[in-house]
Amino acid sequence: MENSNQNLIEEEIKKEISQHKVLVYGKGTKGMPRCGFTLETVQFFSRYGHPFEVIDVLNNPPKRELLSKITNWPTLPKVFIDGEFYGDTDILDEMERKGEVKPLLDKIFGK
Image 1 (cartoon, rainbow, N blue to C red):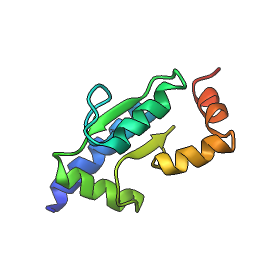
Image 2: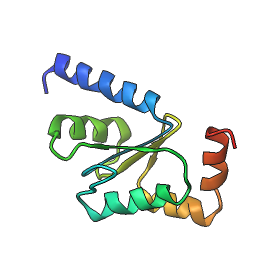
Image 3: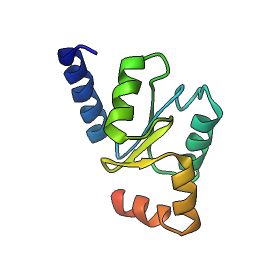
Image 4: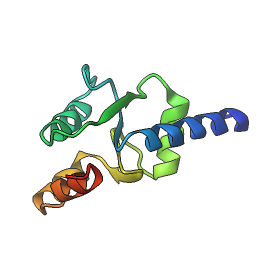
């Protein structure tokens, strides 16, 4: 990947993460997930009632590749909460079992 192009993509990713308290990079969109894991993640966050965004990176290999490098996480979806990378629904499901998700989201959204 050309370095200046990589820098532009990295800046775009940083901006997206800073603009959304809960951000999911996945395959498809919130309204039209294009894989089961992205659908599962949309359903997961929908249960909590807080705003979240899904950015489709299915057809953007350079962005997907850079996200994998930045996060050291090879698969989609990739979930960021309050600017921090959390992994995917396997991680979130475990956090939910421990009762950690609702307090985290309530804190971020000032509930």
